[in-house]
Image 1 (cartoon, rainbow, N blue to C red):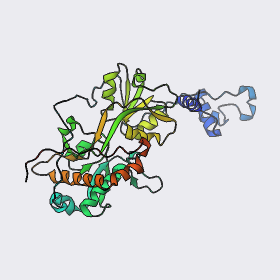
Image 2 (cartoon, rainbow, N blue to C red; image 1 turned 45 degrees about the horizontal axis):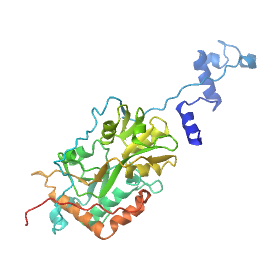
Image 3 (cartoon, one colour; image 1 turned 180 degrees about the vertical axis):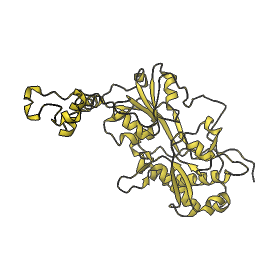
Image 4 (cartoon, rainbow, N blue to C red; image 1 turned 30 degrees about the vertical axis):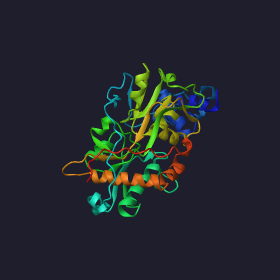
Length: 360
């Protein structure tokens, strides 16, 4: 057994040790039914000096199960209540509005007047959007993209406000106008297109599986009868249930929660997009990405649907204009080299597809 697996086996059942006199006394008192006076050697019990060495009771072993992350949900009966993956060959979710020549003052007047772009993202997605432990500042691939959009709107990449969102509430935040855009490794799908709109893809990810080195899990079939962690509001678990008959899924709020769960041996694997998994492996060298690429996941910037009271078409064109620029001037490749080079050489930014429009 490897050192890592021995460490994990030890974490499954924690033992209470004599870390101090107080801890030992409390455990002994609880185990033997002794009240406070007896524990202190008062009138109700024998004096401490009168207890012989043979009278000592050993410290009992106590099973200490680590609590699940807050808000965690366990499911064993299929993808009930989880996002469904329903192929719709009649839907092409990728085309978006083409950039035009209008200035930001015409495209996004409300955002310009406000003086800042409000961006919803994750604060615990390593490499995409996370807090630098040295500076405490948000950083990562998605953060850089948000700053590039702000640069083109205001001429200043710093005029952006970040708001933390979970996978579950990111669409709701757009619908309620709590944020202008969501940049949170969100896949463009037909189902989500019914609720919000998207930019053209800014990154192409692929679903993979993450497991402990030496665990024996190397293919999706090896997850049969195992426990797998996913983030709530994602489609990852549904795809596994398409392939497997027996599966226990732990659904949590953030991918950071999945990292803790696999380190505490509460799950056997994590599944999501490779770009997110490479950020998790950067935090724990005993984890590895295994198996083939399962599904393509094109990421887009999420934007609220256009309504009479909130015309967002200009914002879509503004974002797509920024994506065109960072593709052409090499900014996207520099961002990839900075954050995602662990996935291999740069694949290049996905080619855009635009909705056909009548000439203006």
